[in-house]
Structures are given as C-alpha cells and as structure tokens.
Image (cartoon, rainbow, N blue to C red; front, side):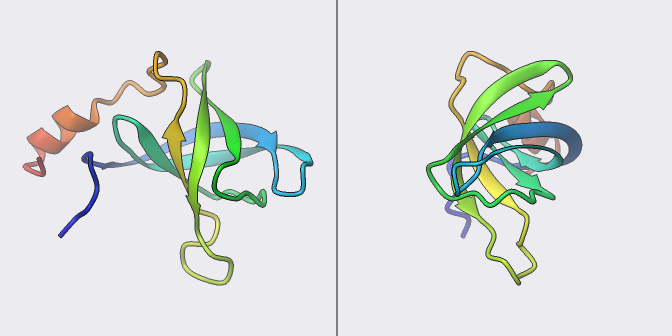
Length: 109
C-alpha cells in the first residue's frame, strides 16, 4: 500500500538548482524533475552532496521556488542522484501540471 499523502505524476522536466551543499559550499547545476505532486517533487541527476533538511532553489521556466530536502538516494544504489524535495514557497506554482487532475485522468486517485 502506498503511504504517500498525495498523488505523484511522472514527468521529465529540466530545471536548474542551486544552494549550499552538505559541506557548506555553494553549487549550481542542471537537474530534472522525475515526479511531481502538489507539495513536492523528486529531482534526478543531482551531483551535489545534499542531506535532509538542506534547502535548494529550483528554477523552472523562469519561475523560482525554494525546496527542503526530505530524502536523498544512497550513493552506489540505483537511486543515487535522486533527491526528494518539499516546496517551501507555498504561494509559488512552479510547474503548469496539476498532479491531482493528471492522477484522476489516469485513474490513480
């Protein structure tokens, strides 16, 4: 059974991310969104060393929002480079996809 509170939609959207890594060094890099939900997302292709609780800024199509790192894929596993994030910019709609509508259309809700 899925313990997630919100439906996820699989996407492949290019983004730019930046912030401070786990060693307090600034970074900026391209990444991509793998899944999105109403309040969060999964980033992939993340090279920066991050840890839960860190914050990153995400830029998509000219709109920026701040996210908190919730989980990080472990190095050496197939989830390496993936990062789960929660939107801290509650008033910013970063993507033009409505996860609830997409899930309902796909029969997932």
